[in-house]
Image (tube, rainbow, N blue to C red; front, side, top):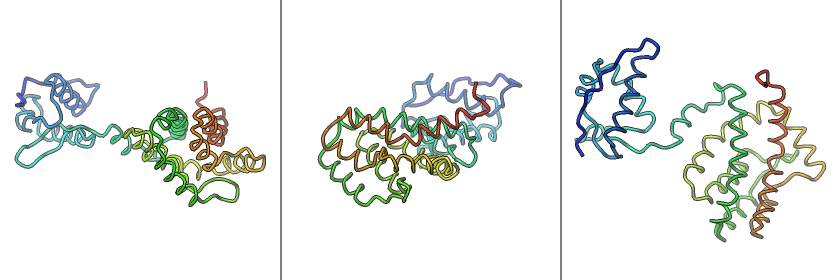
Length: 249
């Protein structure tokens, strides 16, 4: 497909940066021309003339689209449209050290909701091979004295659950959320420690082994409830922090 270059000229708006306007115009152009991954994009010079902007402004807008995985440059072909990773941009901006606590709490809550929600997908795709792999992960898992799994053991087990769903976006989200979970557990360990100790003391802690046994029995409802109980420390933590938030209405 040959991508023609219509008149994309910018109408200057003092409330929006020129680069933002160019980026929006380019996205509108891709959609209006019904471009598909692999289709060619006009040359920088042609786009700059059509938009009525300098090459520097255009390149900055194109750089943003490259970061999103929307375009790339190929030898002998020039710029082409590409299929972006749905969570690619999210991975770049989810840096726990620069995000506010409320944003981190929301991400943690989203992780919990997602893991409860994928139970049906897990059981739809579950095989004996998956159970063997989970057994290996559980057997080599390491638990602290107060009942919490080490970050590596926690990551391995839950990553496998994500993989079993067969949904690549769900699996990719695990890579995004992992540093958030680790960061929050470390930053707020004084909150998590007594919660985990109480669960361990009362025998209410749901282990990876408990979850695995329910998977082996193909007990979907039991597994879903056990997942809710497994995340009890997160639920308790989020309730405490949300209720103490100065932004609570």
